[in-house]
Length: 347
Image 1 (cartoon, rainbow, N blue to C red):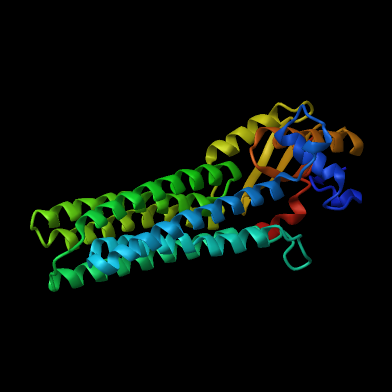
Image 2 (image 1 turned 30 degrees about the vertical axis):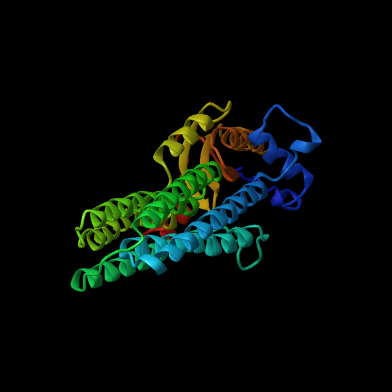
């Protein structure tokens, strides 16, 4: 016996991907001591539904905020508030690509997309980054235009009230999106939350601009508009870094360490070889090799691989599938069983 591989969806053992057994095991991962019928839900589907709720609630809150601010912009002429309202509107509209991504992520894998459509979330994250960049460019354009052509800002109390409304709405949405994004492992949703948080602070900057205008400093409004542009650029950097890391299959090294420790603790595992983790949307998959006793039977090696997979599912949050390859411990003088593959692995 040279190797054994085992996938959590058990397709190699004749079970369908959506059998009750799979749902039971996935539910067991999240609530390992509960076996009630109500607990037998697919957590990946549940996570997507949770993400969708976060998106549409955020869209409603930010949509109302942006419309309120736009109405004040129309009567006041505040370029700082204009930049803030446009940014809020763009932030609300990011719910659209994310919503599409979550819907696609629910679709079953196909012969062409064998891993499913979870990576659509990464594309949505890229769209969000581009949206942030576009809103920064617009805010800069409007602020520079007002610096070159200064105009007084009217209805300052309404501008101040709209700025406060923008801060409250954005901070609430930011906390909600970031919390849900971290719970379900969605980098795109977390990036969207960071975007909303910066919008909240830029709304406070609008309040400062209104105060400056009240004191007769007409350049205060466009200067604040430029400050808003700088703040947007900072969140653009953070969001882009998180999204691009996810697109390049980056994972937290602490997760890799945690997975290795869990597998090493499995009886029968002598060593852990190559271990890889990757995000597919807001779900993790693992591939690893373990070394077992070279004299173990195929059934024994299979049992060890199953226990290694089980340990991973309990140890690594949001892990939904694992592929375990069992290698026999080398005997003295034995040729490396993978030698025949060497010429395929050279760069």
